[in-house]
Amino acid sequence: MSARPRHVPAATAPKSAEPHIRRRRDLMSLAEPGSVVIVPGAHEVLRNGDSHFAFRQDSDFLYLTGFDEPDAVLVLVPGREAGEQLLFCRESDPDRERWDGPRLGLDAARERLAVDDCFPIDDLDEILPGLMEGRERIYHAVGRNPAFDRQVIEWRNELRNQKRNVRAPEEFIGLDHLLHELRLIKSPDELRSMRRAARISADAHARAMQACRPGLSEAELTAELLHEFARNGCPPSYLPIVASGANALILHYVKNDQPLPDDGLVLIDAGCEVDGYAADISRTFPVSGRFTPAQRAIHDLVRAAQLQAIDQARPGRAFDDIHDAACRVLTEGLIDLGLLTGSLDANLEQQAYRRFYMHKTGHWIGLDVHDVGDYRIDGQSRQLEKNMVTTVEPALYIGFDDDIPEEFRGIGVRIEDDIRVTDDDPENLTGSVPADAAAIETLMASSNRADGRGGGR
Image (cartoon, rainbow, N blue to C red; front, side, top):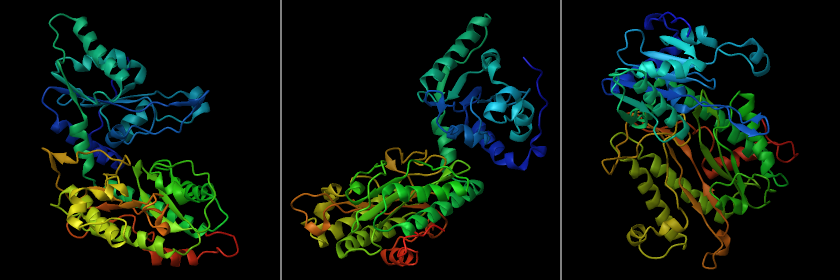
């Protein structure tokens, strides 16, 4: 085992590490006395043969460290005199770095991440059991990674077997609740990253709208999105959905390989990541640049539902109020269009809208697209608080059943934005890309559609 590196006082820690220091301290303050907290990072994953998927750090680990290398483990030992915040990571290795790129290494990791000690990841089995000694409980993400669960148990059992009368932890506690409640309220640093991801994602959607014209394919619009992400140095936060025509009725359509219908709609659901923080935007627009009357009616209805739902994203309102507001507007509009019959109250009670709208109106967003945090507290929809961020994404998916008027058949529309709860009016992080039908048509008309050059900016 290498000698213990020197402690880095918080007062001299790099400024870039300050948010992560604060998060680690907050987490330790919430843990029960006599605890040890273990947070593993992600591993590289083979795609096929000897090719790997692009590496994405575990979100909990990233939140607490900002460290974006594989094969690392964070251990927090509150009250430990020799250092509370410990990192295990890969050592510098010039031979491997020649093939795979630079590693931060132990000394630089200790300094830049402002942890107390930094040890080789290969020494984890040797050191970790000793860090458990005298502790009563272990916090880690129980059940998420069965192999790591077994490792944690083996470390505890090894400690028991090392000496007689040694005190080893008896209790295992899931880390998710404590850590994920911290992640739910976004800090100014997090919001800066989310706003940048939102702006780049909005520009990508606008680029795809301006490039769109009859004769193109879903794949070509996908390329427009990915080009905008890549030129800003951002990976997609999820597989983009570019669903034209009836493909928009498939909620998680990702093939993105069909020709665009000349007179149809395109539903795009796409976003990028900045510093690990995701954006998530959906827009629906006409391939031709002009909505038909039926397409416009459905689009306007979904947009009206979204505006009412966004207005509910205020402190003290229940999270479910967002969905309830959207469903009321959608149901009333479906009755007006003849797609539902009967009274508004009866249709709402029977959830008749679910024939055309079968998902919820939003989800938390942050380091994960579907971010962490409870939606219900003691069985009740939780109250919204300042700096929570949720998507608001009402939709309608009109099938081909015989009882549906022909002009509405096969229309799928979803409109989605990322909304921050403030002290006052909600902040739409992704509102720079048009969502109203008239504004969409204006943007599409401003591109070079006629000469076939597209609208990439």
